[in-house]
Amino acid sequence: MEDGEDSMKVYYDDKHMLLYIEIKEDEVTETKPAGEGVFIDLNKAGEVVGIEIWDFDRVINSILEPIVRRAVGYIIERRDRICKKLLHGEEEE
Image 1 (cartoon, rainbow, N blue to C red):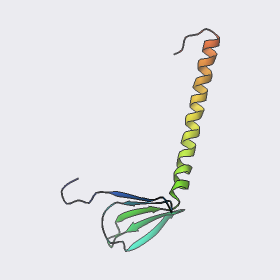
Image 2: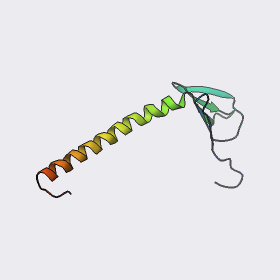
Image 3: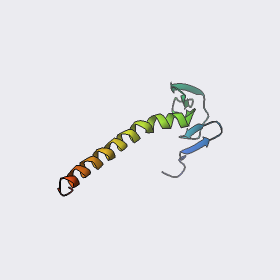
Image 4: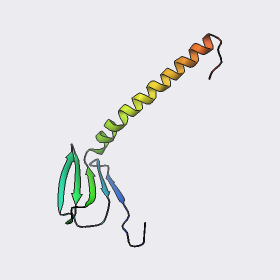
């Protein structure tokens, strides 16, 4: 970042499970919904200055769950291939 530019800041309220990403320090003049529990804060020029995510734990879990399921599926598949090769006396790749 160049001198004088604002840096992004992230705030998390674990009591209320609320995540706020401040993209730039500026006055919020409008807030628009962007999905279930997600709100975009805009300044007077219509630029995004922040993103608020309510019930962040639920949101992050819904994002991570399919990723974890796919990873576990891959691990199980890989394990099964290795076991079959070992049972048949083949060398592992």
